[in-house]
Length: 153
Image (cartoon, rainbow, N blue to C red; front, side, top):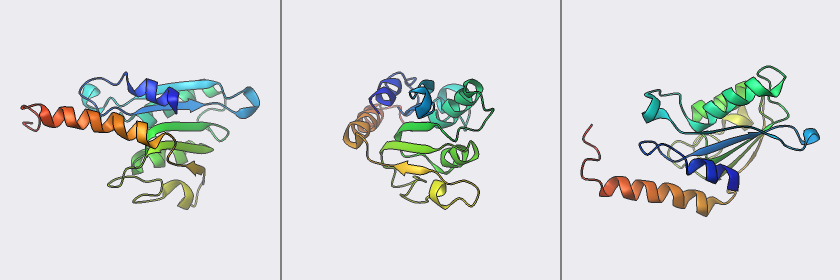
């Protein structure tokens, strides 16, 4: 999770700071396959969440096409329904996340996509360095609220 936090620190200024890392199989020593930050605002792409971008990049490097069953997705914020669905679609073996997302979280908070999927379930571990992950988000949103132009769009 410390690596995901470091990745999140590089999120473009307009985007919510979320970092995602995909690690390869244990048998290979958990190599880092891909990292990504949120880029939704920067790229004007509603699918450019850190998790989706990291899964795309990892699938390109993994060697079993898009099947990431023996891989782990580590992310600073609980994945939303789209990201949890992408992880299930990629057959990810494990999701580890930091801060819960009580409004849109889909790994146990609002929905539980990975554990309820009839297609492919995966292990989920929550709350890893949750306070540090939440602090990163809190700092971002406090800064946004202090910006007089925030919300003018």
